[in-house]
Image (cartoon, rainbow, N blue to C red; front, side):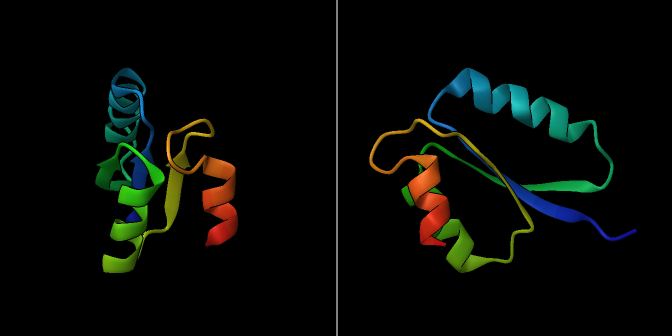
Length: 71
């Protein structure tokens, strides 16, 4: 089975940790990175192919909706 690559983007450490814990329980998901904001996520997305974003809406610098629109 092919793995689905993903990243977690959230400015809150506890939210990131919770999502990472859930992702680790799902065999077909492969976590590639965790990011504190959309700017970090953008760097990751330019470096490697990512299938799924777990993206927070309210974040500093650039909110999740505007970041998604920019992609």
